Image (cartoon, rainbow, N blue to C red):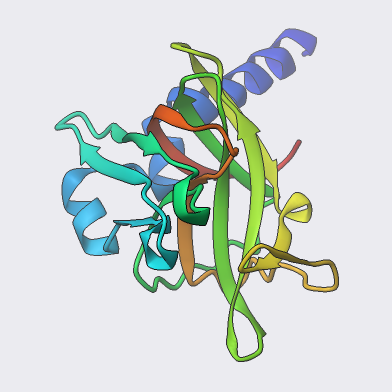
Length: 193
C-alpha cells in the first residue's frame, strides 16, 4: 500500500514535467508553431517608449520557444517582452503555473492580464523566476504570488482573477544591459504544491 502511494505520487510528479497526458489536460501553451500563431505571440520591446532593446521570437519544429535578443538601458529603456493577443483562459481550478525553461542565469517574469483595470487600462500581474545558465529546470509560480502593476507602478490592492486570464507574456527587465536568451518548452497549470 505504501509503495503504491509512492508510485502514484512519483507518476504524478513525472507527468508534471514530461507526460503528454498532463500536457493535454493542463496545458496553457506547448509552443507548437501553429498554436503560437493562433495565440498571436509577438515581441513588445521598450521601443514603445523610445528604448533600444531588441527581442526576437522563434519557435522550433519541436515546440521550443526561443526568446532572445539584446537588452539596452539607453533612452530610458530596459525591457523586452513577448505576449499573446487577447485570449480567454479560465485557470481558476489551478494553484498556479508551471514552466519548463532553459535560460542564461537571468531573472525573467511571467506576466498575466485579467479583467483588472487601472485608469481604464489592463493591469499586468507578474511573478519572477530565475534561470540556471544552460540547464533545463522546472519552475512553479503560485497565482497568489503574482503582483499587480501598471507601467512600472506597483498596485498592491489588485488581485489576479485566475478565472479570467486575457493575456499571457514573458518579460526581461532586470536592468542588466546585454545579450539574453530564454528557451521555454511549455507553460502548464498545476493543482497542488
